[in-house]
Image 1: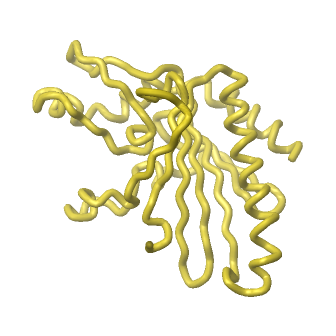
Image 2: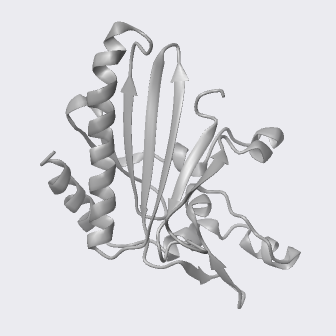
Image 3: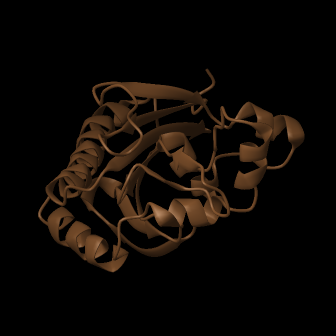
Length: 204
C-alpha cells in the first residue's frame, strides 16, 4: 500500500543474476532517496518517450522506448475497478497483457539475449495502470569509463537506479557515465528487435 508502491524485477542469466534466475526482487517505487531530495518522482525509464508504439486488442499498448538500453514497454489500463464491469474486464485484459509480456520475453530467449523484466502498477480514481519493461541486453557487465573497474548491471540499473558497493572513487566515477554504461550493454540493432516484437505480437 498504496497501489504502485512496489516495482517487481527479474534478472535472467547474463543480465545481473548473481545467484540464480528463478526469483524476483521487490523495490520501493518511487525510490525513496530521490523523493526525499525532491529530484524525481520515479525510475528513469518511466519518463522515457516512445519511439514507436502500437495497441493490441483488450487495450495493451506496446512501445519501443527512447532509452540507452533497448527496452520494450507494455502497458494497459483498466477502468471501473471494483464494479461489475471490472469482473468482465480484468480477466481478458490481464490475460492479454500477460501473454504479450511472455511473448516478448520468449523473443529475448530465442535471440539468446540476456534480459531484465520489471512490473509496476498504479491506481488513480478507480483506473488501474499496469506497466512492464523488458530490457534486451548484450552482456551482464561493462567497464566504467576512464577506470579499470567492471560494473555488473541488474534490473535496478536498467531502470535507472545504480547501486554501488565499492569505494567512493568508484561511485564518483559513475557520475555522468550512466547513460553510456546502459548503452554499452544494450542488445542492438533495436530496430530488428522491434520488428520481431511487432510480428510476434500481431499473432496474439
